[in-house]
Each structure stands twice: as structure tokens, then as C-alpha cells.
Length: 603
Image (cartoon, rainbow, N blue to C red; front, side, top):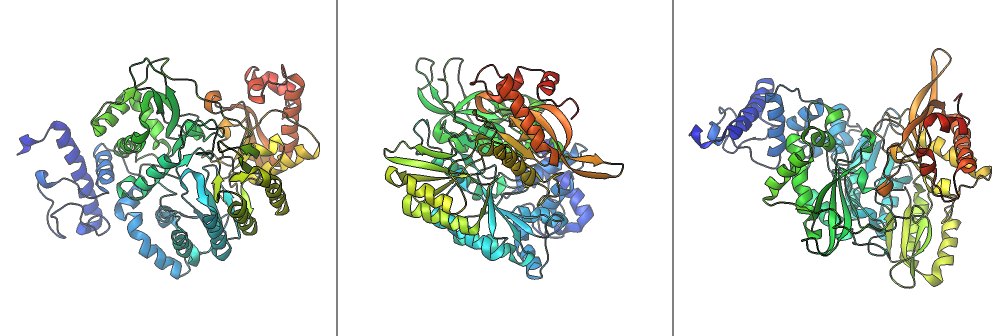
């Protein structure tokens, strides 16, 4: 019967058998975490014949990929072995048992518990952090209030808006982790799959459905993909994390070009052999921490086919992503190795149909985003209504502020809280006659709807106050920069983004900032170091997408406010016109010339 298999099928089965045999030899005949990996195999039985060795169950695609890589002579990383030994979803009862004993999940159990949304953040904090899943970044006022109640009961009494338009809560004790997770479910939310090797929070245009210029309301598409992920276990346990975003061409960017998959709403013009109207343009491979944006594939996707296409893309990645090198385990590296044509061919095989390619000139230019539309009052497409962007200090809110914002959204808005990738939030549906009253209520709780361009464009990751990977206190020094610039009265009259990230993971996407800072340890004397940063310039996103260039290295954190002041003064004094942006200014000059204008020769 061996003649019934093609050479590719034989190699597939040989690899899978090799992986299984390796496990059996190292762990006995117990199988995968005590589970039976094949249909018809009982404990103690020999492996089935090749014709019977077809993997089954939702984890089969992952187990087969692991086995093929081992067959090819690659050594699986510890995280892959951990997933094979005990799927993290199967570990929940055991991890909950650890919590009952007051113990945090450590080492590989810390990795497993991240599948449930909890992150042990020691040694910086002896606590869990919980990151939620909020599709399109939109939740109801009562849910927002519920998160505040949970953060107060089980966490540190505050939350942060993240750079994926999400919420995370810190200082959750060992015994309280499961209670926090289960409390989220009680209010219709979840943290499932928000960490580790999974498809992360699904982002979309924050003004979806209310934006005067949008081409597509991204909410139903983000929601469909969100629930597709939640209800298919085979989409968990990827080679590494995976990001998907939908941008409906609204006024506030979703930064879809920094995602593994970016769906960009585009208008197809008549006369090109394609049905005219609005489609998704497909971009792949964004990972700005590795200096790459998602690139246009030339493919356009019918709006209602986004989930189907994304599913196929993820499955090709699951089968072919590198499970032996965590640094090269992202989609970008499959695309680099294969090229886009081969990758898309594999996607088409799974789909059973050809993807649609858009010829040159078939797409209308997309509307440009407004880099300041996430702050202040802006008219909606619904006449007489507005969204109001609330300025948060690097994403942080107290529970009292969260409850007050929920009350405002409930009493004066449409009962939605809309989070943005700029670490702030919008209250939508506010009628014209209530705008002034809402702004006053926001100021009364210590927040505002207006701020300087520097403060509005400031983004920072958690930093070393709560992340062991960070080399610097990113939030602390970022705040010092904005506070200093505002205090001296230096006005930057063009939009500017300053992104401060703590390490090479680039959670704050320093490479896309007009000014990017990445944490570094700066030597002081012969043996000591202090928090500091390497500084970059000229990054951008969207139609202005550019990876920032290195400007100066090892600047002490305490010196960064003065250095940024010099950079901004040099820009304002030497720009060609008032309309020239900081990014455009820095890109037309060589680095040495910029250092001279910024007076940084000795920095």
C-alpha cells in the first residue's frame, strides 16, 4: 500500500513518526501530555502502520511541523517542546492549582500560562500582568467599568492602554490570577491567547463606523476574525506571535503595516477587469522590531473573505515557520526565505482558489490619516455627534478615572470606549451641545482632551519598572521629555511622534517614530551603568513608512530631555518651511549634518 502515497506524503509521515518516536523514547509511551496522538492507538501499543499514521485533532498541524523540523535535523527550542509535552490549554487546572497554593507559574509554566493571558513579570514585579483581547479596541462602558473593578480587586488599581489598542492590568497576585481571568469572562471579555505563540489582539480603525472618510467599517471584520481565533484551537501554538490588523482608511491610523497581516481598505476603479468597489489590499510580513514593514502583495481580497484568507495564511505559517530559532520564527523570515510568490501559491493551495491580483492603476489613492485626530473633539459622520480623544499619560489610568470615563460614555456618548494604538482612548457619540460639559468632566478627573503635539505623539512601552527585558525606564523618561518640552514653552507646530521602547522587541515601535529611543545601559565609571537610550530619527508609517536611522548612542536617560530639546530646536530653526515635518526634515539630511544642527557632535 506504500504506492498509495506520494513522495511528499512519505516524507511528511517519516518526519512525524520520527518526532513521535523521539518523544516516546524520552518520555515512555504516555504520548503527548498523556493524550493519544493518533486515532486507534492505546497506551502500550506499538505505533500504527504508515497508512494509519495520519495525525488527528486540532494540534496535529503543529505536532507534524515539529516532527518535520526534527527529521530535518533541527533542534526544537524549549517552548516548542513544552507545547508538545503539555498543551497550555490543557494545563489550566494544574496552573490554577499552583495559584491556590500562592505560587506563580515559573519557567515553562510561565510560558504556558501566557496562553491564558497572564504574564509573570518578575523580577521587576513579583506579580502577574494580564493582557486582554478587545477586538478593534472597542468595548462597552459597562465592560470598561468592570475591568476597573477587577483591577482594583485583584490588581494594582490602574490599567494601561497598549500599542495594540488593548488594556493590560498589573500587580495581580499569584492567588488572584485565575480569579482575574474568570472575572473577565463574567463581563464578556477574555485574555485567551493574548500572549506567547498566538494570534494577538485584533486591531482595527478606532473610529470605525463613525469616521467621515472611512472606506470600510472594520468592526464586523475584526470581530469575525476574533471569534474565529477563539473557537479554533488549531490556531494556537504558532512558531511565534502573530499580529493582524484591519485599517478602514479612517482618520486615525491602525498601523496595519506593522502587522504580520495588514488588511487595508482600498477602492478598486472601474475598467480593470475586477469588480469595482471597496476591497482589502493584502500586506504581509510587518515586524518593525526587525526593521520591516508589511509589504504590498499585489493581492486584493473581497471584504467578506478576510477571515478565510487570514486563516490560510496563518496555517501556511504554522506548517513552515521556524521552531528551532525564536529570533527567526516570525512570518517575515518565511517570506524572506521563500519569496512572496511561493508563499502565496501555498496559500492558494489551501484556499483551493486563486487570489485576485490588482493591476497597476486599478486602485484609487487611499485617504490619508490625521496624526492628531486621536486627541480632542472631531465631528463624526453622524450629524451633530463627535468623538472626543482623551489624552492619557502614556496610557495609564487609575480605576477611579476608568469608572468616571465609563460614566461619561454612558451618560453623554454612545456607550462605547474606543482604545487607540496611540495609547489613549476616544469617547464617541457625544452630541454637539454636550461637548463642553464632557471636556470639563474629563478635566475634573485629572485627564484632558488637549495637549501639546509632543505629548500627543508620545508612546512608550512598560519599561524596566515592569518588564525584565527593558534596559531603561521608558515611561518615566518619556514623560520627563514631554514635561520638559512643555515646561520651557517650546512649541512644535507639526505632528511629531516620539516612541520610547526598552529592548529589541520594540513593543513601542521605536523604528517608526519621528524620534525613536531604544533602551541601553550606559556606562558610568568603570563598573556601573545607568538607564539610557540609543536615539534614532526619521521613522514613519502608512504612505510615509520608513525605518528610522541611528542618530546617537548611549545617551543617559536623565540627558534625554535636553537632547530632544536640541533636536526640536534644530528642526524648527532649519526647516525649509513651516509645513515641512520633522521626519521629512531629517530624511533630507545626512546623519552628520543632523548632529551638527542638533548640536550633538559630542553626545
